[in-house]
Length: 364
View 1: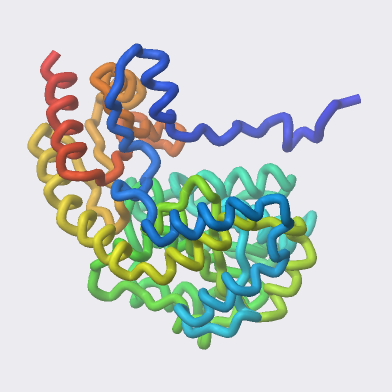
View 2: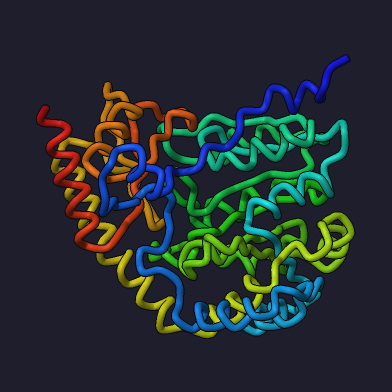
């Protein structure tokens, strides 16, 4: 008798970026620059930190199971009714929750090969069929290829916009025909974790598109521009009946008390969000130029990170060599890009350190 179902036994666990403490302990160094996990280089809002400290004094109490105040704050910010908003323990929980709630035994999840690995893991963990369309031009979603794979068994389509780890994005003129072609009973999940870093003309207004496409679910997060990755807080917007079903399946108290308080305060700190956005918009092209100057192919990005490819190189080896220089980046061989690295856009001095460290590594 098997101990676990085959779909669980065959799962490859998600491998997170190495924490600073582990790198310093392993290599006996200090002052490591972590540019691996697309975190906010400026940290969280001071207002969010103050709210988290105050809430920490009440952690003997259960949190509000409905996250009423957080959902109300999100509703005011987004212009959507609270009944259309759901929250979770990071976007990852919401991705898993969508699969567990809506995808039946004989139905399928559709996404793009090379996109955010959480979509594949959620489908496999639930024992659901996963269908992946190859990317076009190596790093871009192929919407025509995805559309060709939609069948009556396709229950959920996951699209990341901008994509992780490539940083590429879909324009509204590309996305709308795809949404129009998808059957109404198929849910399309648009994951906008990096939305706040976008400055590309023609980027879609996903919340506005929901009026035309009621099968559209929009996911966003507090982990990136709000700098609350360690508190695990994500949210989504969908029509009320979908939110109602998700609420039936989610665990009670799935968002902790400290995260709820910090999230509300972070939403109110528009200055911190503006500073965080400005840092990325200024440093993203400068870092891209520095990496390109070393001979890497840098994929244009709308996230707070860049995918940099060195054809013929061993990305895992580059990652290890950079670790010894005190710089943590993310190898992405598991996504199908064995010669590439994903690097977070950090503060100017961190970006300069990365470029110089990579120069040293490549000159050896």
